[in-house]
Length: 311
Ligand code: F6P
Image (tube, rainbow, N blue to C red; front, side):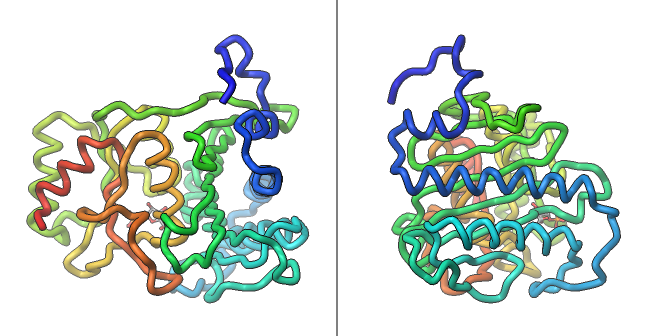
């Protein structure tokens, strides 16, 4: 790939970046169209009157109307993209066929992850994965690209199509401009982000966290998966974990909608993602709504977790 110097990188927009990277034309058009939905979703967030919809989603969590409208925005965009045959969303209980089932890609979305944080004014995000095969064949075999959009003080978009992990910022003119190319994590970081109640952790996990604390790691946990992962990527290291809980052996986060795309982006940035033992991307999902424990971040911390959890 052509080298983009520091002096010119701010003038590189998303479409140009993907073109220079040699990403196949249909895939880069699709990534572009999905990035555009971030603008629509962010407008919805700003319009939001913060009232709860009074509905429950299929997983029984409290759901804001915003979740549903974000899902509709993405579905609508994909339907007419010409590139997508099927769509799966965390807001739906099954994979749906769209666009006459003719497109070559399958898209999964967590349309508005962390939506319950909207009324606290913390950052939230949209997580997307683009697959070529069936999404139940496993991340490694079918994932061709992943991206997320962060709605915070800035709107940023991070993508990888197997060509490294890159960050773009939405500017005032509505263009996604390159802010960081080839994000590369250090061998280790100094922050940890950790979900679940301490009394519900397993002994191995508790010992691991005590180890990180003894090493001086700083706690960074917002309760939003997107900004928490974003912090590790942008600060070039650290660990996010939502572990096995005694009460919930599979943890909380969803393998297909949340973990596979983030694992793809993290690996492309030189990091790792495991369930404590095996790579997230080598796990073959058995169900759309499958949950999975996760250790994701820079190599040192992810490998250390494995040592503490044992075989
Ligand atoms: O899966 C939804 C989600 O809100 C994630 O964005 C976040 O990482 C996690 O759940 C937070 O869970 P908890 O409220 O248990 O810390």
